[in-house]
Image 1 (cartoon, helix red, strand yellow):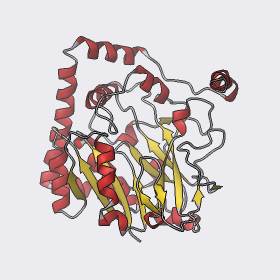
Image 2 (tube, helix red, strand yellow; image 1 turned 45 degrees about the vertical axis):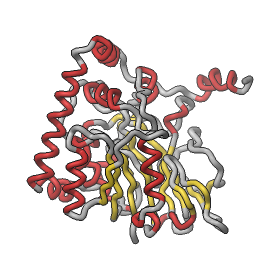
Image 3 (cartoon, rainbow, N blue to C red; image 1 turned 30 degrees about the vertical axis):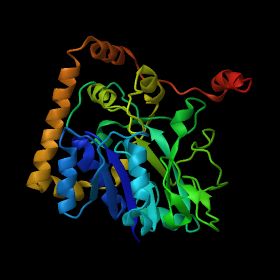
Image 4 (cartoon, rainbow, N blue to C red; image 1 turned 90 degrees about the horizontal axis):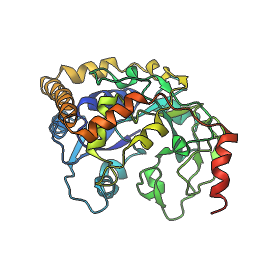
Length: 334
């Protein structure tokens, strides 16, 4: 079985090796990585990984009319690592597949859903939980407080990415594949094993537990220092930044402790990557770059103001159904 991850990255050298080690341990066989306009050594790290046969790296420097992410997906549609794969998933560097069955690897998930052509991996948002300083330690160890399994609001907490058979679709999408192949009758299942109608939505039903077989751990915020660097970088699907306190508040959900991802041992894979002298040096360079970039941003008042607001704000609280109804009722009147 060949399972391909498609990744787009900019200035993520400090996090790349953990992400790769995790998904290698999880059972993905190939990575198709696109880098755009990196200044922290990410592109050079991917070049080295390509030399070692760990990834296929394509430089995707801009400008891009639709944003770098969409430009990368259009190229990925035509790439052999996608077209010849049995399964494909487009995932970001802050998204980690967390399987809850068997040995917690991809074959175990697929064995639990043998009739599936597409499986929705619903986000489980992991909040900041008061972590101020960026530190060079695994993201999955640093952030263990998450959103509850069911909630009423925010709706963005229940978005998903789709693990799918590329033979059934002609185009990749950010959250779900597009353009079913002629004659395709793809069967969709959610992360708890329930069959779904194909539909066009990109959100799971927030009223039910969607994580019994698999979830997508989404570390959207990270440390407060790192969040400023993320804001400075901008969004992957458009050039301009859309990060602000609203983005932070809607994702800083810390109500449940969830350490389930630690059951997958990635240490041999991570140690092997760090043992390479080139990768190890580039990782350290990426860590130093991130700390220096934060210091540079903090010389400007707007960034200091945002950082102060992050420190003032506590963890967010997911709204229940009754509270969410107060918001949703007005939408119905539009």
